[in-house]
Length: 367
Image (tube, rainbow, N blue to C red):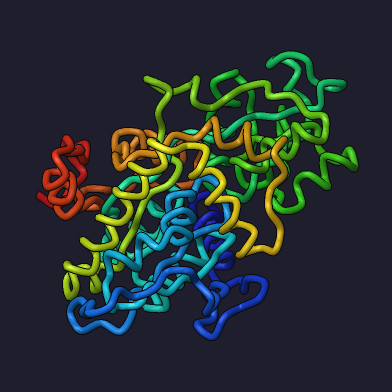
């Protein structure tokens, strides 16, 4: 069986795995009914929709969704159409929810967006906006690894086979001249696929020597005594690379563009507020994390994690194309046709109305 075939089968299997605390929709945990957001008196529904269902992860790299929800900005823009939320901890599960119609719009990483688009022959989703850049680090046990060359021969965790960080680490390892079998993770470096929730426990137990992970997992490892050996941002031009995009189900986009525009308007307003009020936004994101998970992040994790993420409406399309090329190089993906994966029409309409500059789709848009 070829690596690409095995990769596709792995994705198919992952996409069917249930999450903890499944909601009635069957994919993500549902929103609580005690959101602070209230519908303004006299507000009207958009396109007569009862609700817009929004998916996101409980990660700081999804802070636009966290803060927008906590501050009531999505509900404000949607009027009497209720903003409903579903939480996910794996990209394939969110893509499956989008495909099934259980959610309409979602915040998600680039690799699952590319996989979802290509597996559907370009019919399932569109990337309609950006959200965040950065927030990914290689954190190691300083007693076992003191330099980049010391990574060879060690056990390094990534969140999931073929996910965004897994691809990035495999590509970086290849650039060091090291050989690693992408499927098994065996080679000059041992890649240990480990859920972000248990990576700190694995580090504490000594079963891994380090991890290439997003925030706040990276800062959790530092709090356990780990050392940041490499910030992935340093590997990219201008230190920018996409870590979170906004995707929408194509059928929903066709039928309800006004609702999608409202969510994008709220997203842009949220990013503007985050960048203007970073401390207040950080606190808002942490309150939503606590509401979602029952536990807020301590300051020694929250502060360094937050400082490494940049919030932007720009989807940084050129970097997504590069990340897809890295997956192809690793043997995890057949060279994809990404033409049409972006539709930034509504986002650019929103940005223009706000007097902001428009963003580019790197030739991968619908026009």
